[in-house]
Length: 167
Image (cartoon, rainbow, N blue to C red; front, side, top):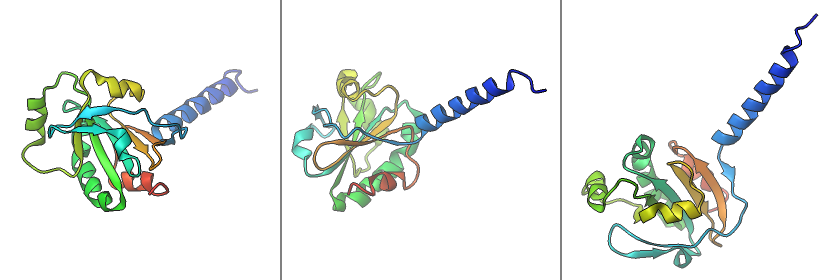
């Protein structure tokens, strides 16, 4: 005779496994239009998402105090350089919580980066995109539609895989 708790326990474990899988795997956006924005860049220019239509845009929301963000910056930089000739623009959007422009500059150092750093004061753009945790990456296609959302750090070569059928 089987204990009565075995079947409900298996059902609960299966549900937890499905939810965990859905959370950790990158998923496709609903192909809705990406919320438009204009943000200042660290270099002093303004970036308007509308003007980037025709390019694939990678929005990577980050902060200097996020250890996973810091760990992936080198990979993000390499990917931005590798993908730029294929029409991909990588925007590293700093959410500006507990940070200053001087602190961001000091963090990035003197090295020239292949991605453009944007400053999201008050996290308004992060809120418009529904960013609930740092860090999150969005991929916008050439028509300005959200195509991918990746929560968590990008592993080596992962950005290339996420963009494979978009570029």
